[in-house]
Image (cartoon, rainbow, N blue to C red; front, top):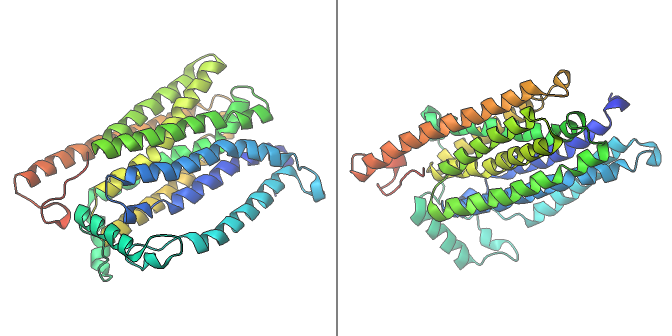
Length: 353
């Protein structure tokens, strides 16, 4: 049973649901696009989610005005209405989502012709040589578990989703308890930082695809996130603290597609991709659990332990990214010298820094 004293806090769950949906559905573009097209596609995918999060607070506040209608509290109407919308979209998605390229995707109505699907498969095959699935083999499926980079990607995503869920759930509460805004203002002020994050993530994704880089954006977002946390936590004015939230929210939102693109660009093979996708989703879910415990009620109104936890997460992401880039750089040099063939390729594959 949820106490009425927590009614307004439940409005923050709207953003959480949006994040849950996009985290679970975000690996499909990797099968349709070559490595340096995936960044923009992930960026657009999460841009939609970020904009939805920007509007979620306003929507939640609007639904709260239904308080008392049919005898239900306002927070119950949030779950009822958004649940109905989710179900309707899910039913529509069943008929609209196309299958993978190798699974007769050309049979989907209003999509691509058979020749166009074959062109997509040929393009992906030329880029990384893994467009066609191999027969399932448990040994091949589990083989990537021996690679430290796989768990490095997963840990980066865990830290990113920890902060993303923490922000999605607690940002309205922080705006209210720490900065002194009322409930309506707290919900509405969630929107601008998420809108900024949407623009930033697409700009970084476009840059990464054009210049074939992922690590610099991730590291930039880590620095921006730490800066935003410091400004939010240790500056005296509400205006500067809100500016810090802009930096933090933008950095975290932008890093979601960047980490996913970083992983997608540096693995090869259908079963490797399947295993790595599973680890990313799994660790992302763990981050979601951790995110709900970052900003604890007993730490209000300053939430200093939560701020330090997020700073630590940024440092972990940055450390792993630098370590992987140094490893990838060394392996690329060995491949260029003809010493090794990367990821079981014919020798043409190179890691993306």
